[in-house]
Every structure is written in structure tokens, then in C-alpha cells.
Image (cartoon, rainbow over all chains, first blue to last red; front, top):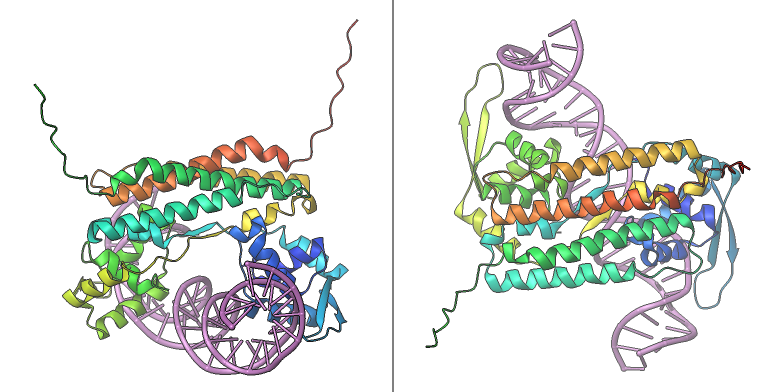
Length: 181
Length: 181
DNA sequence: GCTTCCATGTAATAGGTTACATGATTTG
DNA sequence: CAAATCATGTAACCTATTACATGGAAGC
């Protein structure tokens, strides 16, 4: 289990210093957000622990009307730990899909609801594909590879749904065309 | 959070009765195993709870040299609960990838290790693609759709890695060809 | 002879999500 | 005027993973 929230934080901090809030935002907004996630409830405790372990340091900035902003910086020890984590064998990808699970039981779902489910999923996958189509100007090769990977996969999913949804939908009653004489 | 282990068990049991052991095996071997998972440590307690709630019933078969086999059957109540679960909005897919996270930091990984990581992943994705290429003869349309979805996505991933791994690899030193006179 | 398959189950542990608590400022 | 953004953090809860416990039979 190398990819705990602490490792994720170290990774982002290896690129740039950031606050807990900014770390979460980065995970939500950047391409990587499609492949990892972490909530505030896990990020803040992770940062506290990284401090205790001396893997990050922290500067505080006073602000008016809101809590002090704490900017975390990775330490040499932290960088060392992160580089070491990168040497471990990454765990298998996890691709969990409630949607696909549901589709296994398409025959137990009413047609109207089924159509709604498929339409929603289709829109959702399209949206993700489009989000991942846009390159940021400052993108590193790694980021480009990862974003491209996501884009490719979602593009394939969009096309697949388009071309194969008929497998799930009960064929509409064939209207026998009146033979015109 | 509709897709807990209990719902997964109900789903499979809506198709056929099974023991806890068989449920886990089905999740490991069938196409669906690529999109959901559950370990014995979660399946057995889930079945116990489903029993308490009256959503499954159980017949025991004595066996020699191993624990009694408990075959679980879904009850009408259980079927009702499952059908109801299918009406909820499925949660977003979760696609967690340590590999892709690592690749964001390709510049912090030694070339030899990086090549190993990419080769491993490539082989892994190829294997999954091939596993999902094979249709079982008894496949339902839902199963066909789900398996095809997986196959398509992994196929796209294989091709993407093949065509774009160069983004991550430092270009080998150009050997300047000796100009022949 | 070792590994895998069959077959159930418990317990310790680890980890995350969600909701809560607080509150000013900016944007729509 | 409502919602989102900024900003941190805690605590209750839930759930799953992992390892453990047991052990015969079959396949390699």
C-alpha cells in the first residue's frame, strides 16, 4: 500500500510547496485527479504526520478572516522517502464501476430507467474525455502521458457505449412497413 | 454507497445460488472481476448479515474433510432489495492507478527502473485485454456488454502505451552516423 | 514434495469518508 | 441573496484488508 495519502502529498510537494487546501484542489482539478483522490479529512492528518516524521516543513502565514495558511515544503528526507516509494512495484490499477455492475443485471431493470442510466453514463464519460483533451501549457512529459492515457481510455469508452448500447436495450418492436404497391 | 459487498452478493445470488467460496471465485474469474472485488473477509460477514436480515436463506451440506458447504439462496425480500438498489444512481467509476501516479514523476525515476515499470504495465494491460477478449458461450447480453467494455478500454490502453511511452523515456543518445564518402 | 483447490470463519488493524465546527469574502 | 471559495482541523463511523486458524485432497 504505497499509494496512501501521505505518498500522494509528498509527490505533489516534490514539485511545489503547497497548503493542504491547495493539495486537495490539485487532486480535484489536474489530470491526476481522475486516477487518485484524497479528501480533506485524510490530507490534513497526513500532513501532520509528515511533519512529525520530518518529511515536510511548514511556514505559517497569517490571514484575516480565515485560518492561518500553512505552506508545506518537502524536506530532503521527504524527497528521499518519496523517491524510495517510486521504486516499489506499483499496485494493480483498480477500476471499480458500479455502472458496469448494474449493466450485468440490465434484464432486471426497466427499459426507461436503463436508458436513463446509459444516457447519464454516456454524458459522464464524454465529459471526462473532453476534460482530458485539453493540454495545459506548462505540462511535463509525465503529465502529458497521463492525461493522454486518460483521454484515450475515455474516448474508447465513449465509442464503445455508442456502438454497443443496443446490446442492453430490448429491441423496439419492429414496425412492419406497409408494402406500397 | 450502494455497491457494498452485500449488494454484490445479492446480485450474483439473483442469478444463481452459491456458497461464499463460489461467490468469491465468480468475482475473481468472471469479467465482472475486473470492475468489482471482494475478499473472503468481507463476503462471509456480508452473508451472515444478509441471513440476519432475511434477504438470503441457506442450506448446509455436510462434507468430509472440510467445513460444511453452505449454499445461499436469495429470498423474495432479497430480490426486492436488490432490484431497489439497481434503481439508485450508480456512483461514479473509480479508476485508481498507482502506475499513472508514478508516471507523473517519471523524471524522478532512473531510466532502467522506468523501462521496467512500463514494460510490466504493458504486459499487464495486454493480459487483461486478452482475458476479456474471450466470450463465454453462456454469456448474457449484459455480460457481453461489460466484457466488451473492458476489452475495448484495455485495448485502447495497450495501444496508447505502445505509441506514447517515448514521452516518458529519455531519448537515447543519437548516434551520429558516419558519413561515408 | 509443494502448491493450489476446496471451505469457512474471526480478529486486529488500518485507512478513509462524512459530517461537523467556524467564518469572511468573492462571485453569480 | 445564495452559493462557492478560501482555510483548517476533529471525530464518529464504517468498511475493507490482512493475517490467522484448520485441514484434507488433488494436481504438478
